[in-house]
Each structure stands twice: as C-alpha cells, then as structure tokens.
Image (cartoon, rainbow, N blue to C red; front, side, top):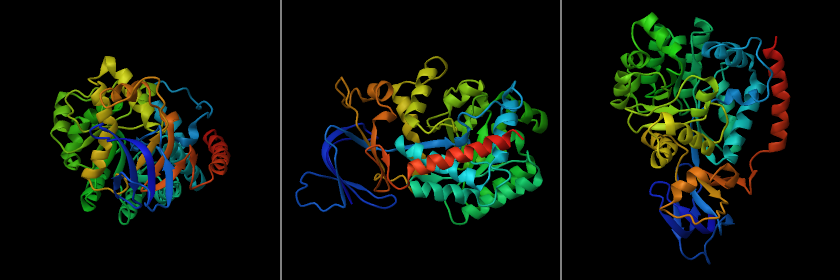
Amino acid sequence: MILLKNATYIDWKTLEFKKTNILVEKGSNRKIQFIDNTENQQADQTIDCKGKIVTKSFANGHHHVYSALARGMGAPKKNPENFYEILQYIWWTLDKALDKEMIEASALSTAIACAKAGTTFVIDHHASPNLIEGSLDIIAKAFDKVGVNHLLCYEVTDRDGEDKAEKGLSETENYLKSNQGLVGLHASFTVGNETMKNAADLMNKFNSGFHIHVAEDLYDQRHCNDNYNTRVIERLNDYGVLDSSKTILGHCLHINENERNIIQSSKSFVVQNMESNLNNKVGYFNAKGLGDRIILGTDGMHSDMLQSVKSAFFVGQEFDTIDYPSAYERFRKVHDYIKLNQFDGDGENNLVILDYDSPTEINQNNFLGHFIFGINSNHVNDVISNGKIIVKDRKIQNVNESEILEFSKEQSKHLWKKMQQ
C-alpha cells in the first residue's frame, strides 16, 4: 500500500479537482481510496504530494520498440524518394538487422523512456524478421523489469517470404496462448490473401483483434485496388477484422467517405500518429466521420504521449476537427479501449505525480488550457504502475538506468554497422 499525502487529485474522466490523501493498492487492476485522516494509516511507502498534481498515468496506443536504437544513426544506402523507399531503405533494413540483444536493449530503453514520461501501458507493434521466435517474450520481460504494462503483437507480413509469414503467425499463436496480445500485421500491401485469412482465423481463435497499419500512404490504397479490386478498409472488413473491438487501425490517412462510414459503424479503434506522418510526409489525419474511437500513439518516434497530443492539436488546427476537449479525449480514449476489452494493467492504481508549478491558477474549468500549453513530461516527478513506484523523484526504480543506456549504446553501434553491410 502506498500513501499519497496532501495531494491535489484530478479525476481523469471528469477533471474534477480534489484536495485529498490517497491510498494506492498494489496489484493489477486494483483501486485507490480517498481518505481524510492519515494519522493511524499503515502504508509501505508514503509520498508527500504537497503542491503537486496526482492523476491517472498515460497509455500509448501505438509504439514500435524496434525503432529505439535508430536515434542518431547514419544515412541509408539510398536517399528515399517516397514512402515505400523509406520502409525499404530505413525500417526494413533496420528490423532485419535486429538480434536478441538489440531487441532487449530496445525494449528496456523504450520502457524506461515511457515510464519517465508518465506512461504505464504500451501497445506495441514489433518486427524482427531474422529473429521472430521468442521476440515478444524478450520485449515482455524487459517491460516487466521496468514495471510498464503492455499489449504486444508481432508484425506478420509476406514481404520476406512465406516462411517468415508462417513464423510470424506461429510466434503470435505461441504468445497468445499465455499472454494478452493482438494479431499484428504490417499493412495490406505486404499481406496476401492466404496470410490475411490465416491471421483472421488466428484472431477468431483467440478472440483477439488486428493491429495493422492502414492507408498510411496512398501506395497502400493503390496496391489494394490494383491487386484486390477493393480499398483497404473494405478488404479488412471482408475478413471480419473490424468486428472486433480489440482491432486497432493505424494511421487511416488516405481513406474515403465509405471507408470512414465502415469504421464508424464498426467496433474497431483508430490510432493517430501525427509526428510520424509529418516525418514521412504522407499526409494529415482528419477525424471527420470516424466516430469517437480515436486513440493516440507515437509510432516509435519517441515515448512521450504529452508531446504526441500537443502535436495532434497544433497540426490539427488546419487539417483536423480537433479542439481542446477532443484532444484530451483522444489522449485518454486508450483507457476505454483497454477497459472495454478487459486487458490487465491499466487500473486506477496507475498514477502519475506532476510537479507542475504554474504561474497561473489551474482548476477544473481551465485545466485543458494547461494540458495543451503547460503540462509536459518534464513535470513528471513520480510514476506508480499497478500500485508500485517505478519512477521516484524522476529516477527509475526497478532497473539500473545508466547500465541499460550503456548497453543500448553498445547495441546501437552493432545495429548501425549491420545496416551498412
């Protein structure tokens, strides 16, 4: 049990402010209690939150652990001229070079970055074509060490041949037998009909959902039309993918009105990744006609969800239907996704303590202004995951961060060298 004294608690759903003391239960999906008197209260740890804000921690709706060691790497062998070449010469070159140690370093450093930015639950989409078997377990163990909850999948694709596609499906099935997870696919344009059907069958077998990139670039739609005489969302819908509330559709930039209507009337969720779209110059997200099941991710660009929502808001002023309330709603909608589908690890005992000393008053009525223009990850002071402190006074608690960063730097050098071969 953790006792948070003298806290200003903000209810993440109603934005109601409450001056209170909080008892935090340990364990997955446990509760918090508000108490007035702390004199005789027994607790394993006590944190004085005077002058600080306590609220529910954050969750990332779409991440890529495998990109963690890309920061600062050299230029690709060929300068990409379009989205397909960005994949071909950067990300598909990188993921093919990953080995066990690189994946472990990527996962540990990602989990640390997420935790220090206030995120305690990560939905990740992984690819390592030359080390498929056991790759999800490597990531899961790394996240567990740091104390960050997770929902993982392996990116099944035909781009490396039938054998690798079958291995991806096998890795998915083995992982789902004993873990919560999703059936991951790269994108329609790298998944043929047989693999798509096998993945859909696997989804139904485990009552799971797809996690797939959708119409991130126009190439995806052109390929689908040329090869299947349909559009991407229509193709996925034909396989029953959108019937699952666990399905996550990544990006959804280049979709028409009919596809938007299909999504809105389905059970699936859409994940927006603004900064990645800007970086790849693929277009701008617009929520028009999609309904309210929109969540936010970082797409491996970084692990800072507060930064992600700000980007979505500012860029969306010209290209989207976003405003203060809907920006916050997208930021928090991932919690609804997790709860609706009964995944473990996002209970009310996942909290962030913000040391946010604003020069102006903050209250329920103006919180969204502070959320967009003031609060950022630098204000994350402490983080509680499943009722356990994983960040205290801005320092990771469960692992040696400096040792992991040294390990990651060493592995990044090996990765970059392999990518040039």
